[in-house]
Image (cartoon, rainbow, N blue to C red; front, side):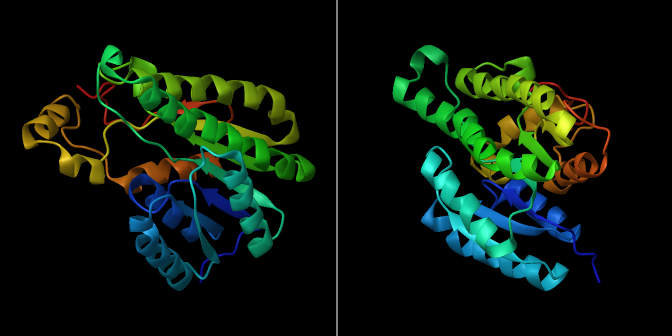
Length: 252
């Protein structure tokens, strides 16, 4: 029987990929979880994930549909978690995101504005709503899922890299302002991980990415979830960027 933890966790963008792996890890560690997804096509996947973690780990799990680019939607998600599990929010994982691949001059303002709203402003919205709960009990862990793109700036990822680098700066300020209240804020900046997005890439592109990783393979989402576990349980870790990347610091 798994130990039940006090408080619950919220993982945005968590029906698939890295987000789903992190939901499973948090449930394994005994946290009730809020699973967030956006599209109707993800609803059944998210519901099945909730059923899975309830059955496997004996935790509570609810599913919330909505885009974090809207502040009121973020508040409704947090409110749903509090109603289901109580007002102690132990962990917030800002994972939801989208990605383009185009030179900046070929992007439309609508495209890069939308990405910044989801990636950066959405994470800020969720954090702004959750922080008072953590400050009240002087405890909590906030994790931003960023990317090596926010460190190295790969070609064709101007808006994505800007958003991820912005999250790094945001994390450092949050840590400075909140560590004294035992609220730890950190980032995970993954390299290339084998998720659904790579199913749409030509095999030669996938092979090229893999060839540039010293370990000669992409990461498994479980390995990103292991980093999350370390951050949650490493009580002296604050204001840091951990990058699981197989030794590779670029995508190309």
